[in-house]
Length: 162
Image (tube, rainbow, N blue to C red):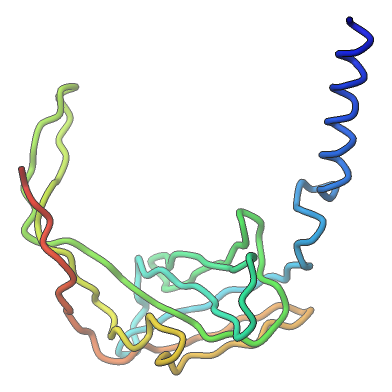
């Protein structure tokens, strides 16, 4: 019985090893290249925006990131640094909530709930067919600065406050 279990476990490990690279990435994942995008709004860094790449040829391996205080999003693909080489449309959103109320949890901590959700970036930048932002990732990676224009406040939905 032990021999059977050992052989079964060995087979599973060999199959897994055959499906991933040494760094744990799937074998079919393309090479990734260091990619960062600085997002500005009205010329100033935009913090907290979600940035993602959309290709004309859909892939299961898409890159995304969130901008820091400097407006820089370092892109990652399925948790690995970088983006595959290619031509992309850049999609940008910044979602936030207003009019939330504070509640105390059972553990005594405070949390914010309810309110209304807004997008603070023009919705044209959130769709592949309307975004005018583009980037080319080469085998040397990419580093771009892109501006999303005027600040907006587009209502998305109301969150119940219970």
